[in-house]
Image (cartoon, rainbow, N blue to C red; front, top):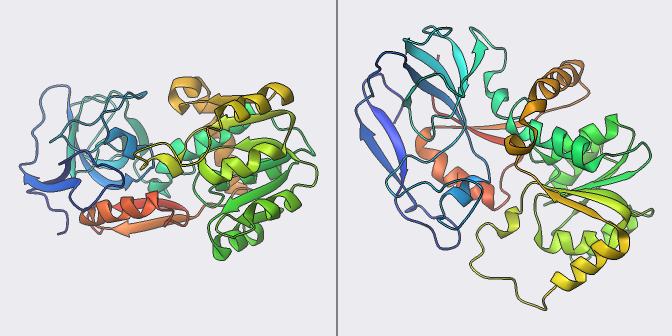
Length: 345
């Protein structure tokens, strides 16, 4: 099922999942490659980004972005090659950052497309450390978290593309960093490879006690992207005037009802009030798009110097994207998960 120059494979939304997506949520179709007109260009997808936010687009519940309609191509960020261009500034063979979705080919008028040059060294990194996940980590931490040297930062999903970057930036800024991840291998990687001061396995039966011991001075910044029992364990450890950037709640994306147990809302609000905690949600390009050039310059320098390390998990084949996405929502990824859609060249 390799990519060809005669057929456009695409994965469309077949149903709105109730709970976790299944093998029936997306349907693989084969259609004709679209043709381009004046002011348009044809893009061939090389890499497709898999990100937790996509689960929300499968639902028609109110959200910050419209849902994917039944029968439409699943949305997603992509790195693509220009096949044919009638758009000024783009030529056949150029690499671009685009939003083709889960398909081989797409037509674009150039709006929202970023030129990556004729031969980028690591084109897929535009979907990770140098793209939306890296930008989310940098902006959420620096603009909302506002960490100060000597403070303690806690971050969940510590080896994912956002969490790993948050922790490494925290170390660069002179903070103590405590990660939270699923499993001993991920925790060891966070400490040994990424330089975290500690990393706690949220699967451990005494997880909350271990987190408490790892944060003897409390937590000043908690970068939230998971929710659930991790948030329950973190909240009591937050210091007065703690800051909590919220970019996601992946543990809740497949939930069909509120979690069992007592209503914790008043308890949470009491903590926020008494400790003067700042908790702010953000959608990266809605809130901080104007800062992207600053981010790109700084992150590129950190990556080039080795101050920030990046782990990528590339899975071959567009047909394998649904299973890889289902696994992503279960925490099965180790680093940034990307689908290699394109031809082997």
